[in-house]
Length: 142
Image (cartoon, rainbow, N blue to C red; front, side, top):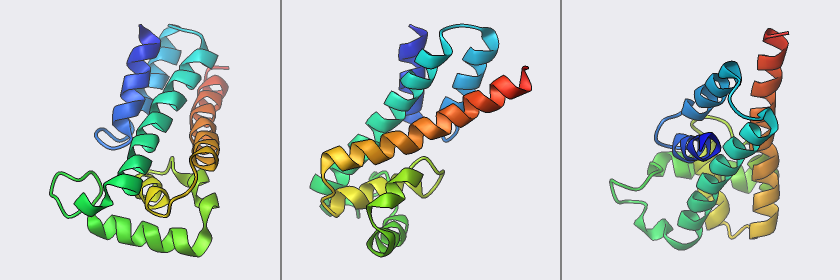
């Protein structure tokens, strides 16, 4: 149950509640609930799933980006698309960053980045983020 809740928190935090999955992970680690490896995996999987949804929006529904309910503002997408054209697929390692990560995954979908390289790079970046949070927690708590 806690792994599913953390997965959902990470899924939502990619856009709706920035940082909430970080806080949820830290709270679960501090409470001693759950295996740390599984907690990091659940958070990573949820955040990657959200990025996959955004990639799909870029690939198949970018024409709806002018709609007010579209999850990425046009200006943010334009900026991310420019970075993506300039630096390429390796930018997906930074898809965990607040503010710019979500537009990067949208730009990757619009640029027709193949799914497997997308998933590998996004997963590495997001897993690295949650592993860094875990490492900082472990170092703080001795």
